[in-house]
Image 1 (tube, rainbow, N blue to C red):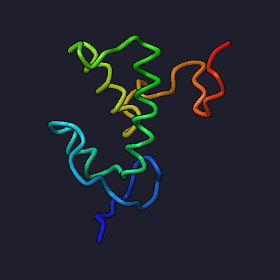
Image 2 (image 1 turned 90 degrees about the vertical axis):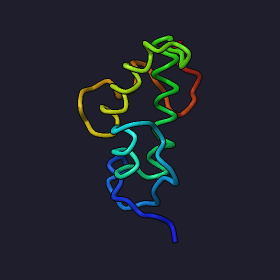
Image 3 (image 1 turned 180 degrees about the horizontal axis):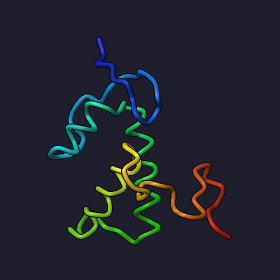
Image 4 (image 1 turned 120 degrees about the vertical axis):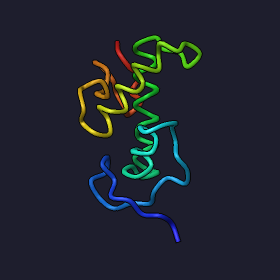
Length: 96
């Protein structure tokens, strides 16, 4: 039977993640409070945040911005997880 969590993203009970998705205390908090579907939504938002801000996972300075984005997206702690201005999740071609 799948592990269920009360997902802070979906605002309902859903199937949890199979493993801790991120190291440390933040990763544990995400594992306990975010569903697999909620994590997928974060990955889509993360892609937009990284592209909009020119971030790279090869640059350690990017991780501070990524972690702030996680706190904002998952736990409403700040607005760093908000969609970048002009972000179109429907894939409508982006800004014109």
